[in-house]
Length: 258
Image (cartoon, rainbow, N blue to C red; front, side):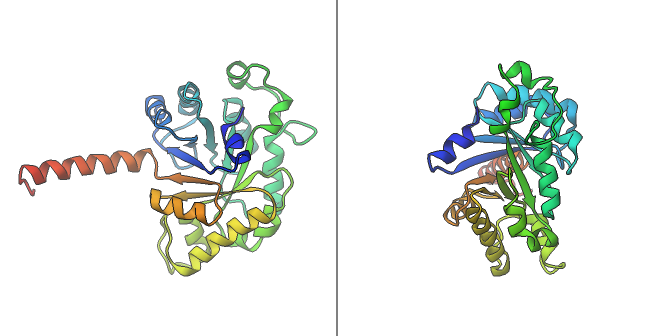
């Protein structure tokens, strides 16, 4: 039911792809490239729910685990993403144990939570969909604020939470008081220490550590730090990077420097 859980049970790390372009075709292309999971960015992506649902449909045939980053800690968006077929939810800006508990409760049907029953698409896409899905969906809370870091150990110990997902850009903004610009693949000692501390807190509580990365090299390093899932770049950056490399190669070969 969930490829990520199978990978982790066998002791293997997972590679996550990222979709910010509101297009089923783009999602289908990304899903065919060999990722273990694919996350649709409903928070910052150029898309809304009418894009989200067909993107989840396009991902289905690949066997990749579909996940969604919801816009905020809100029961409506969490439950609608699950009803549309998401097998994992990444929730931004979790800063307290209470917020983490609320998030977990939105993810699961009673008695484990307060999710309302009505799997509009998921019920058709996954025969037998019901309360048993409580054991298969993943609740990943994003740690990216100063308050979240202060409450890290309490958040990590939240019953029912499956993992912490680190957003390095907001984590840098939230903890460094403007001293460092936002971005991925942090190399500053204060940031690498913090990123590694989050992985340690996850391990201590038996949950999964996940990190958003910009390059495969950094992602591999993070796996060495104990991270169980790394996201490498995303559709917009990959498209821009490949297009720029093609243009630069053409200009170099034709000696057009303009």
